[in-house]
Image 1 (cartoon, protein in one colour):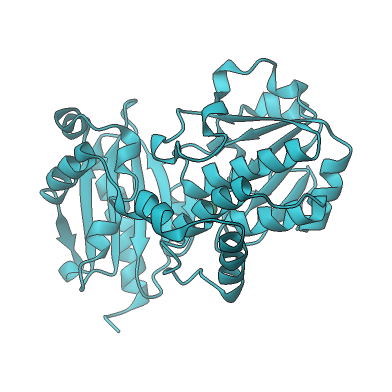
Image 2 (cartoon, helix red, strand yellow; image 1 turned 30 degrees about the vertical axis):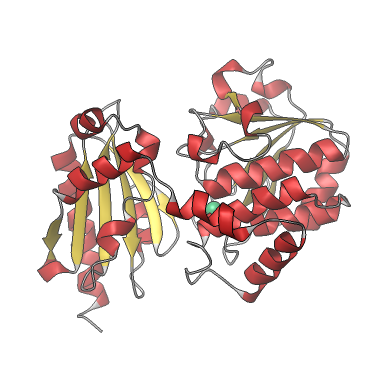
Length: 333
Ligand SMILES: [Mn+2]
């Protein structure tokens, strides 16, 4: 596969000659994955193309208010084989494996387009539009849609707003740039209402996820004099709270809130016994590098990986890497 960095215009050109598109969310899809893919799917249909949006696992219900969400299909129930689409388009996906696609399938796809903002992107596409400086894949999707000559409508605007707003933590993280706000301004101009949307995506949680939060905080532990904090979510805790795996999303931000913590992580026991690890950091601690060294990836201040179980073993591996990273970073600033 060809590597190197392509532009939004390259993507728009590559799209032109194709008709039948498959877009796939990444596993544990977040607001950027769901919103950017829904906006792109809608723009493709506007351009008289056929677009199917699939998910490797069930798409997170908290985004079900987004237009087009109900049409997201299960990747295992596609009406045709992956290799029979003209183009597979992966957005916000650092690695094609994160979309649940088999290497055999991918080898036979005539065109793979990769639109992403993760520094750890593996450049798996024929066209790789990777911009690690963007706040969200939504910023790139906006440029691609412009390149296609499709006007943004209110529905696309809502999807992109949710994407950019979730990936920037409500425009608070330091990935937020002037360009991010210019995009937000354009989206509000198209009728997005930030109050009600913000309430849904930032201030609404299910009762079961709050019960889970209570149990999770009971596991809060520290190392390196408190600079490292971690929490655990087990299958048993999920069962007791009647919570699902996608309700764990975002809970890692709680240990991060503690004033003296520089680095934190959440260990989530998965149904198959694997352990999903979500990292967050403050100051200039690079958790993306830790996740990458453990087979995962992400950004400097938010990253993740998946490790073999049991939880205790995953914990000692993660803790060893985290200790080393903080040792190298030196003492408290
Ligand atoms: Mn993203």
